[in-house]
Length: 492
Image 1 (cartoon, one colour):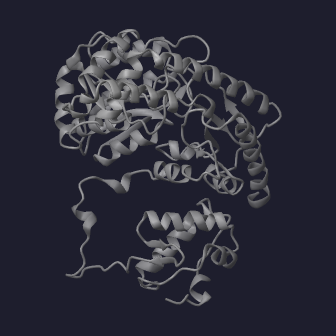
Image 2: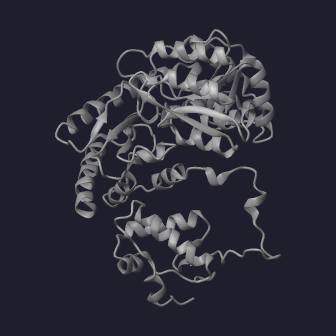
Image 3: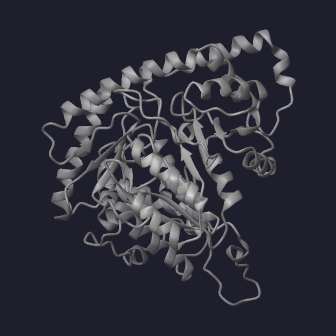
């Protein structure tokens, strides 16, 4: 198909004073043209370079707009040929039209698409990766982990033929029982389950407990992947803000008295994104509230072993004497993100029902990765590796502290552990629009508003500081500072 005349593209209005990011303005207007029938299936869009020139925006803005359209199924790209319209106009009130979304029970339209964007942009090797979590390159366990696993399989090839129970690989469950007890969590084998990453654990818990009309309490700001899982069930999320001691318990009791809350979801130690840890006193108060109102606490704990000062306070599960806590702990933040293995600890009645749901989703978690984690734990290699991580990440925090001394545009909370910096940027700067400029400068971060359920924290950004090398860390902070200064010249 030949290109349309520039007339139709000139109808796209890009308003730099609009709070909506430029790439969204462009993608939404193109999608509207498709639905109105102005752009037919098969029409080829101008190249990113030509469209950027036509609309007087950066090429990266067009890249983001086209990626947005691809993710929504509006366009497709063909290597060497260009980008084409896929979907025709929306047909209303005709017998031929099939409105598939009306048949969907899983409410995907309520999902925050920030997670998808983080993962998509995180694959771009040209960007300094402050967006997602990864292991520092100098202490990445890949070789040690794979050699340990390969040697174990060489000695025990029969393992490849063993059945894989839905609840988890039994030797791993036995090892985890001892590993958890070292952290004050005492559970029998029927109270432990292996899941394919903490996100699957959150999803399974959501499916078991939640339905339309139910409520969940969680932190504000908080982990967007969890809020997506809750929203997809039709449940509503009640957000509670934090102070330096963590989530505010007085506000929680008010909500528990007013709403049919099914559980309280917390990321209590080195929280994502703020790095705040809930104090011991608050933990005890929350456990009393859970007992009083018979509402369980879901404790998502991916970072607690990454402490840089003293050992953090006990987990909710270690303090729990009434079986009110569902504990989730992932291994991906200690090893590498693609290792989708996590442990879920809960009352036996909860575990047995979660197993039934999981069996209908994926039968069982990957047996090879479970065997690999079991051997790595059993040989004591994980504890040695985590100590190396602590040393490496302490060096990063020390460097960041020096880098921020002369950069008033970035006011970052330096955590006592974990993997995130929560940074305040100057008032009036919208972090989602700042991201566009930062990407053009080769650095990626997460806008604070993506971590909010109520549209707050526009002048905050989240930086994952563990994955970039020390040189990349220094370069990345400098580029973000430059992006902030450039934002002023564009928008203020």
